Length: 372
Ligand code: G3I
Image 1 (cartoon, helix red, strand yellow):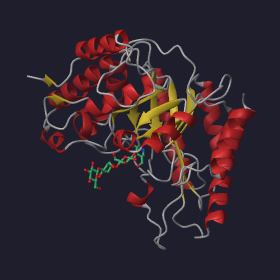
Image 2 (cartoon, rainbow, N blue to C red; image 1 turned 90 degrees about the vertical axis):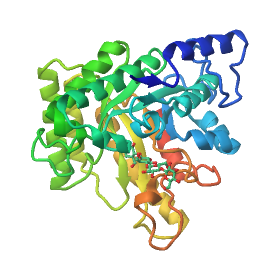
Image 3 (tube, rainbow, N blue to C red; image 1 turned 45 degrees about the vertical axis):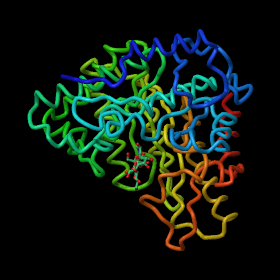
Image 4 (cartoon, rainbow, N blue to C red; image 1 turned 180 degrees about the horizontal axis):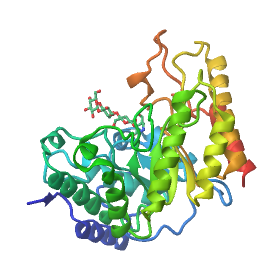
């Protein structure tokens, strides 16, 4: 039997109690949720009307332990997304158990500080707990995937208006839309896992915007052209089957030494907008491991790469949101995979490790204002 550590009813009851007790304020990460009431106030980051909303991936642990980071998120963001706390590994540590403490902490923080939340992510090959390897049939895979999406999306219905439902479905170098990345979901459900995930999310929260999130679609070269082509094929196949989908997330983990394929990217975006799908920039940062060590030079190249990318995108479409995958170089995934050979810290994000604005911050700001 499924044991839920916290039910939606508990969650909403706690929220209602918190609201009645006046517990929503700017104190972050209380154990009590105040997210049942609608977010009617303007964001704490100041007047943002008409600007593309800017946000960042956040870490619950750092929000809890690091007040300067927390204040920087509040000061600069209108929306946040959990970097890991809404992935399967965190929510489903063991089979039959749902744990929402860390996800709720982020929701509470957002609510208390009048930030919106994006959900990340429901159907992905990565971020899975070990027990998922025990799944051994189509029936089990379908049950676990649907149960997960029903449980998580219903818990945050009306609270998370936009979900990365399907994350990174394609193989690195796809031949076609059928080139889906092998994982537990494709092993047992084949390509059906994508419509199953989207339909379940739509059924549970018909008001949520459902996004398919993908990376490596912006660069020059055959692999990236193949990815754009396969992704468009996949989107058309979903549309032809009336599968609910509202947007495409461009992760935009840029590499300073990779050229943006301006024409290829713009043609790709034109096709997406022709399908009446939103475009969101969901995980922007610039991997700097092969850039010169000199910080001023490196920061300028990072900003230039982002400007090149945003310039190409914004000529074709106004993204519904721009999120970076972290706000400050103090907390970034980049060194997990792309440590610098000279041992210097990576600098992929808008604020440096001391939370000072870098040229990348200004570039994002310029594009938001330009499209206001
Ligand atoms: O929680 C453990 C901790 O207990 C342990 O001490 C530490 C030792 O390395 O590892 C911690 O877990 C790591 C976790 O991040 C928290 O930092 C995992 O090993 C590590 O695999 C995990 O990486 C995350 C990765 O997704 C996989 O879930 C990154 O933080 C996160 O930034 C990254 O985010 C992805 C997006 O979801 C999808 N797009 C690409 C993006 C960047 O890779």
